[in-house]
Image (cartoon, rainbow, N blue to C red; front, side, top):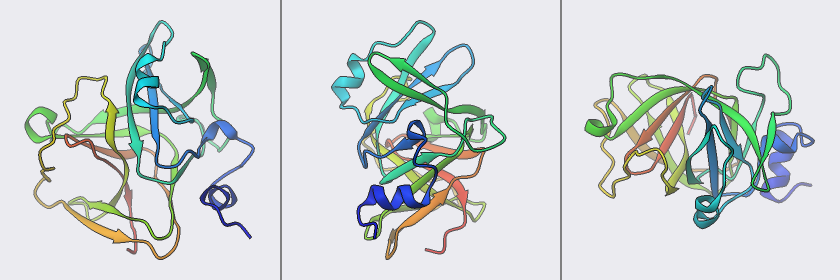
Length: 214
């Protein structure tokens, strides 16, 4: 019988042998770096403190693009961003840590302006699965498409891309709504690719689209 969150995640979400595809440090701070030549986003699957991320030395041609606290309890990347089938992610060593290539940002939704609306919406090419453990309470976003978007992170620990984080209340576009759910059972979600990603100026992020019976 599997009892711990990680045991339950490993049993359901993907191949346990692909260690570079997993993020199993729970609701911790995870950091990413951006490859300037091609837009590849590389994520360290092990948690950082804010101070550790700020001290990270990245190779030439890369920049640190931010670190934030995960809301999900476990995550798995099913395949490389442009791959046709599931498999282990590409990795590289950076300052004594292993980073995996997880995503490539795509088209930005021009209907929203971050400075004016407090919202950046874009597509991201990634194959991302997340787990929320039973008993958890969290917000779910529903956009005007009638579909659901799960929270991925909040509490931006290190903001490197010049997107100001505000302590003011999150403002939703007309027709969008947020509800609070409490789980009776573990929730496993396969976010479709390309993912539609919403970054709000309060530091929260929601991703989908999904249909949740919650």
